[in-house]
Image (cartoon, rainbow over all chains, first blue to last red; front, side, top):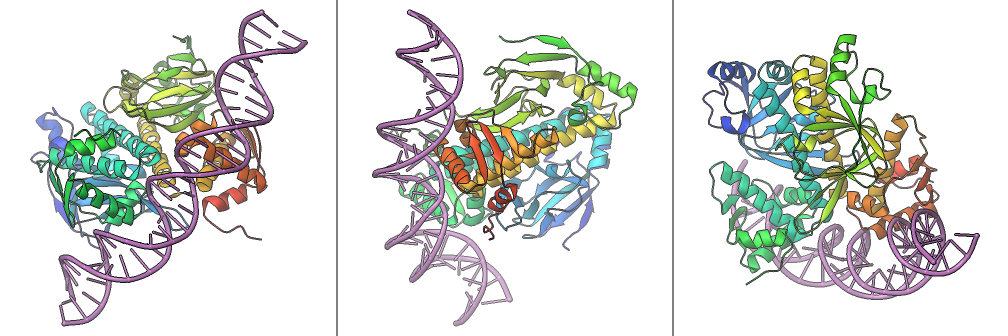
Length: 240
Length: 240
DNA sequence: CGCGTCATTGATGTGCATCAAGTGGTGTGG
DNA sequence: CCACACCACTTGATGCACATCAATGACGCG
């Protein structure tokens, strides 16, 4: 099992504003340092947790990129999300004390391990932490609403456009380019997330290239016209 | 605005085991009574809350049946869930202090209003309540995962079969029949939830009737062979 | 260099959407 | 109490978006 542990602190972590509530006192921050006691390294392709495993901790992604996926007994599976630095995974495990999906590293990754009983304990005392936990879970619920809207009512082009815009927006919030990105997942994984087959994802990319909306070279994508993507998502005519 | 308030208590509510944590002391129960201070009646067709409205409270459904739906600017919308007695709605509002979906009563309904700041306050002191809130939110996340799986990878028959089984299972947990149910929503609303058009929902119902799996008379549905429905969901051959 | 993985592109098939007509149940007002 | 209007639903005919099947091409790695 690929696992390695490192002791570290949130108080001087540059992702703090993504994971943690703002406006904490030094004392509160130090107490949170004690909760986030350990880091763990995950090799590309291996799992952080699997469906059925006991739930003990939430994980804050420090570096790397994950996918989460659910499966049915008959072998169908579906990517439910892609997660990047500063995002929290493992929330699915709270309700039944075991995980109900797999979390797979799409590149070498490092996560902060946050034992959930410690989080509950501390959030009873630090109001900002309590509210922060609630907001993180609510945010995930709202995100999933928008995925349901996408899966239930959008066409292939709209889905891929929404996907690209969402990805680049989250990367931009982390200091990356607004227009260039490197996909960490395969066409098949994108398709699974968007409810499409990989061929359809590939064809839709090609169509966007033809239309001059993006440039694609393998997994490198450059968005030439974000406005065109937005118009596609919003189901509007191309106005040229 | 259709709104009427009534003062009541959880401590003698017959839905308590659905909404509330178990194993509370009398003292803790009494304090929760103070949080769940008022009830509100909602007429069929009117909204409990709307997208954009300020979020202040969660709602526990006491009687009646709701749908929640999200919408895009360009007019598309999607039912994200159907909720019945004992279930909690409004979780979407926590993250940004305003609601991001509409909650519409599909029949005359009554809800318990639970101001969220009071919930946070009390759950700092009552561990069981804190954990209960976390579990409710996690359960919603897991439920949405299964809807994503449904929308992303199931065919029409599988979707409708899964929908019926889920509905009847929840009704059964509330003391209703395992085999008979009355749909509170239109074919169009079912379709919106399942990512299908109303005609497809209707045709799929007809197919199930032809196959002797269910009887349908208007919104009255009797499930003749739950096993056949399960086989459809699990994508198995009809065995005989 | 050769193999495996991932991606692209074309040809064909199909499940569901769309368009359209008709039915039945319900509520309303004369 | 009946006639009418309206809405939800059903069913049929047709079309289309995406799936499926298949062949080929581009990297990357041992």
